[in-house]
Length: 44
Length: 363
Image 1: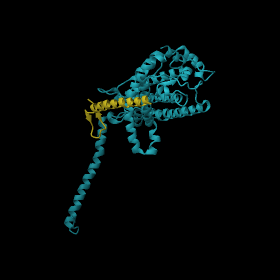
Image 2: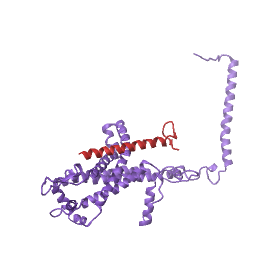
Image 3: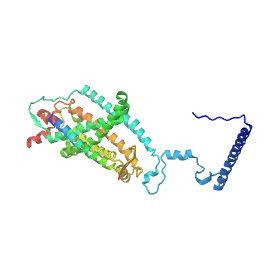
């Protein structure tokens, strides 16, 4: 069962790294313009 | 408190009030009389000719017909910006929504439930596939740690992706009545983010699995015999197989090819309006096999097709994986340890993968 747990941990770790990278991308791309109610977002 | 009163008993005051009222009434009369006259004059100036609406703004065709065409996706043209903006209403969106919900959603549910039912029926009839010679007590290493890691990473990421994906497809109908809208909203948004992030773990593990096992999954002549004997169901004994038998090879290529296509369509969904994979694919199909797909596709059509394709292939994978889970656990004695400890009983190995055992012993 050790390999099962290790596989799941590896999956979570890679997902977490992807999550951090995606969140950073999202913040940078929406930084140019966001309307007051958030419905309009323009990237640079 | 402020109040205003008038003394109507004073004849001078009353006469003055009446004169003022008459003057206001006269002015109002003149205004109402002049307005139609000025409009009529303007109409004549703009030139109503042969029944055309004056001003050249509208034609003889009705507004209803015009907007009906817009509603059903008639495309105009714009200057100086993205040409897609000439499409005011993308009518295929309705078709996409109906196909996704009524067609794909319905048949995928039937496919999943049908597969579970068929596997249960098969188990009831066939029972668990036992090791004919019984457990020998001697084991042989079937999968190394790196192989098992890649397998479980792929398996766990696929299960998370399948559950969060099914939540997006069926959650509104199935879970809102149970948990309510607020809870479902939080769960759906969270599930969507998890789906996005775990997709990358799926891609990494898919690449690992492909690199580790592609050599062992190249078709060979033993596969034909394996098929002819139904993988051992037809006739007596077990057909010969190397590390992977023909059934496992089909599973491998289905997972790899569907997985690649799911990953690409997922990329399109994650980064919308940045790819034109379907236009490219359709152009190739049109030129190679003579299909008549309409190309190029609008950017939003690319998104709609990517979504449908993503769900269809995910459904194919889910059905396949259900069968794989069955045969790897309760369906076959001695199989599951290959992916937990990595070791399998020697008798099991000789019965199901005799050629692989011979190769392993030679090494």
